[in-house]
Each structure stands twice: as C-alpha cells, then as structure tokens.
Amino acid sequence: MIVSPRTVIHHVTMTRQTVRRWIAIGLCALVLALPLGWAAYAVVTWSSFGRVPIRAAPDSAMMRYMPRYDIAELHQTRVAAPAAVTYQAAYEMDLQGSGVVHAIFRAREVLLRATPPRRTDSSFVSELRSIGWGVLEETPGRRIVLGAVTQPWEANVVFRAIPARDYAAFDSAGYVKIVVTLAADSLGPRASRLWTETRAVATDDASRAKFRRYWSIFSPGILLIRSEALRVARREAERAAAAR
Image (cartoon, rainbow, N blue to C red):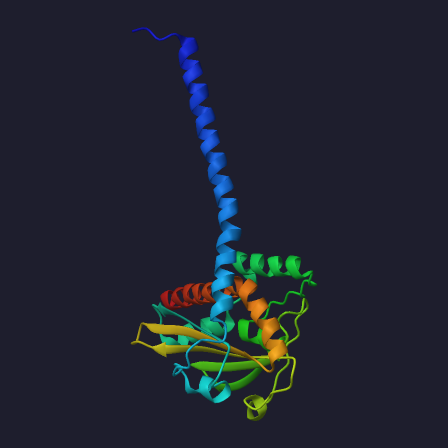
C-alpha cells in the first residue's frame, strides 16, 4: 500500500494538534489543581488548628516556655557530619540565598502588599536577632531556643523579644507568641540529627481568630521554608565535613 505525502503530512499535523491539545489540557488541570489543593489544605489546617495534642518535646525548653500551643511543627533530617559541624552550618546558613525562600517571601509581599525587607548578609540566627527575636536559652555548639511575640497577619510584621524569665507568663492581648528551637544531636562521630521545632500560641480569642486565618492560608509556605532550611544546612554541613 502506497501512502501519499499529503496523507503523511495530514497525519503528522493531526498528531501535533493532539499533542498540543493534551498539553493544554494538562496545563489547565495543573493551574486548577494548585489553588484547589491549597484550598483543601487550608480547610484541613483550619479544622485542626488548636487541636494539636500536647506531647513531650524533643527539648524540655519548649515545655518550659510554651507548654500549651495552637500549632506545633517538628522538622528533622539526618546529616552525614558531626553534630558540632551540623549545628554551626545551621546557625550560620544564609536562607536569603535560597530561590525557594525568596519566592515564598515575595509571594507574601505581593499578597499582603508588604514592604520588601532590607537584605542583609548575616547568618540565620543573627538575622533573626536583628529583626527582633530574643534568645531564651542556648547551649553553645548544640542548641538555641529563640522566642518572640508578633502579629503575623500584619503586612509588615514586627517581632518583639521578651526576657526569658517573663516569656511563659506573657499574655498581653493582641499577640502571638512563637518559640523556635534549632538543635543538632550526635548520632556518632560522623553523623548527626538536625532538628527544629516551632510552637505558637495566641494570647486572646481575637488574636487566635486572626492567627487561625493567617496560618490556614500561609502555613504551606512557612513549612516549606522550614524544610528548605534543613536542606540548606545539611548541604553546607556535609560540604564542610567533606572538606575536613
């Protein structure tokens, strides 16, 4: 059977049109899936807000400063480096250089019409302290516990440090208290566990309602930043360990 060139061209054209059609359908499905998936996550987060079971923390400091909380998130990763090297890498990491973190912060600025913050070249912990976070406890080379009170739903969020002795008792209306632990535990001479836990609690019902809305919408980005921070720290720690 002889197939004419015209027939071949026709079939090729139809195949290309079919491929383009399926690509267009796939892109449309993706565009629809993202907001729908985000909306579903927001509904689940809204429903579970404030229902996180009270549990023993990896570090007792979390229980001292925030025994009860509205949200609690624990992230951890295994690192092929000594604990001291891992902790130093996490302490000094530069998250501003991460494209993922930059994109998330940029999205928040657009959604809330916030003013872009001035970029610094300081380390992770130094950056937190420079914008208002305070050190509640610290074990040099192993663990640091930071705390702040803030109103995260504001476009240009401001963090305020509270002395460690007053932090647990702080209950002024209109705020959310946040405690973050960053630590590295030894798993042997060449391995460690890097982990971070974040807890937050609103100080009154009105603030809790605002925080609940904010967390339901923005928590995916916040949690992604936590995961990205561990990835960056792990990469830098393993690089430093290899160089030694």
